[in-house]
Image (cartoon, rainbow, N blue to C red; front, side):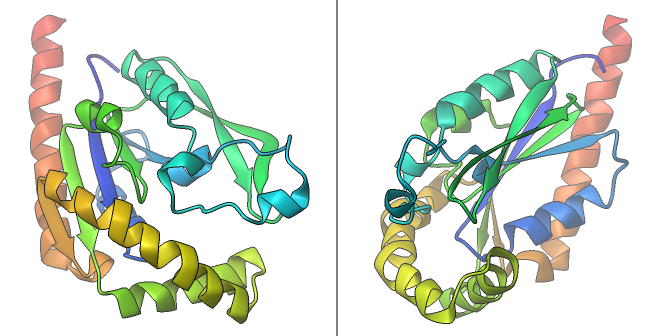
Length: 216
């Protein structure tokens, strides 16, 4: 791979459909072209805290993320260096001992609820996307995910939504919409917007490859 990778930020509230949008874009290209970096892999390590204290973590607050490590890894990828992406274990509420070795690719999609909240991350993005989905749809999706995939109870998910997720969304996530170049309503169901995004990525890649050939 030659030249600096293209960085696309895909933001939006929890359950908005960011992953569906990202997956739909990735399906248009080969695995060798696009790399996805999920912000929620970069929750801070909490192994130094008792388990009871970890349970109080607000995962929708900017302070929950290790953006310093995320920035370092993004800079490494932009310099065509591999990284060891961390893995977060939601059952024990801290970072796993496991890491995932990731190689740089032509396009990096940075996906997460608060990627547009940190100016350092925003400055690295060539395209900024905000997936905008109604709150009732988002809470239903979050209920399904947390109960099925993370072993949570219905009451705990609802309590967390009312006391942490919703207030954090209104305070931190929703305001970042103004930094987006593109706003996609209804997430992965908006096929027209996804087609436009895929076409834009194709255009960027085409120009990038032309520039790489000129350099070589």
